[in-house]
Length: 303
Image (cartoon, rainbow, N blue to C red; front, side, top):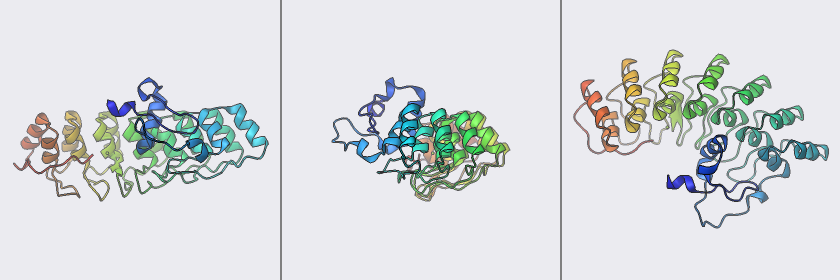
């Protein structure tokens, strides 16, 4: 819980207590990830990294956005700094549908690349915070539902929303043709199934977070239950669910053919070792009953 007390140094908001913030702000903080600064850290003024239009979009100030656009502000100014966003990405990340709609009408590029950390586009940002109306808006504006995950902490739209547990957005993306088996980002990436189960596929993300409903939906859509995550650690959805102690998800994955002896890309670790290193005794029992070998030592936390 202590890590949640860190403040986020983003454009004009100098310190925020995540615990006291609203749910969408909490989700945005999760997306920003390593952008969280420790208390007492000598932060550079983030306002210098954001254009006035990006700041106005982030804050949801439609009147200010209108004023800046009327004065010729560049609606497609690129992200500044490591955690920057375009104006449209900022509006999507913080859930400002009216601002996003105005920026699109002013010519904002819906598939412009994001900042260096994650390189998340507007649709990926909106999916990560589960804003259904924004996702619909971006798709109708031509956003690429299968834009690949960025190299570092990147997520496809489906991986992002599976990781966050937004079932309605998962359904919308699948209906729009999202690739349930899109590869994860190279570093800290996940498949959609592992993201729902984290370096995750959509299924891994779902399994990591224990969202059984999303895990089942992704499997129904053809998710590969044995797909690995990023090459750095490379765990499967079963590794993710075992590590976090999600009993029902583990059982569902095994029922769907998950390999009980699957090895991670890092140290060839099995799901049983993942469960053991995290003290998940019930998961260990389930894995033993399903044919896991007796090797329980030598594991490390993968997700």
